[in-house]
Image (cartoon, rainbow, N blue to C red; front, side):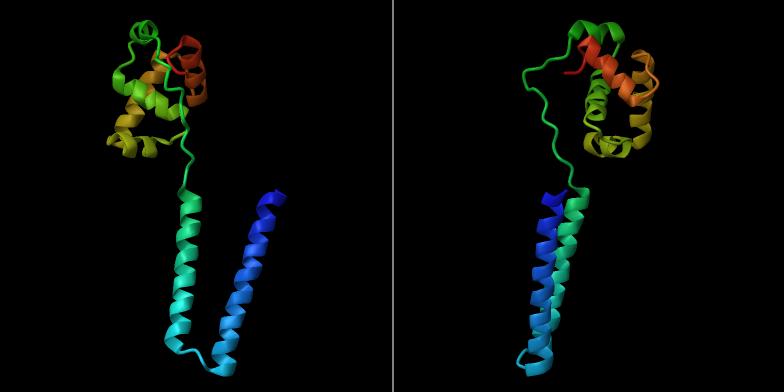
Length: 141
């Protein structure tokens, strides 16, 4: 936790110091034009907004073993379609129905249908249970 708080605290202190220096030069000396002051503030807060937005929406990419191939016999015996397998892999990565729908260019309702079908085929009630059973059967790596 200290590794996170300390750098952000130092960065915030430096940013406040920089803002105070610019503000001081603008109001006391008057050697900065109003356009520079407003432009500097706009750039600063736009950059900060983009960075915060990226931090809040960025998800780490889960890398699967490229050498893993699902057990074709298990997939066939369960009756899991290719699209359902794709949905199951994305569920295992922790994506929501909406995110899966966006990634596979489907409607959220279609993703829900595939998920329900998977739960029935894997005899599972929840996502975590379905993932666990799929890994046990060799459907997921």
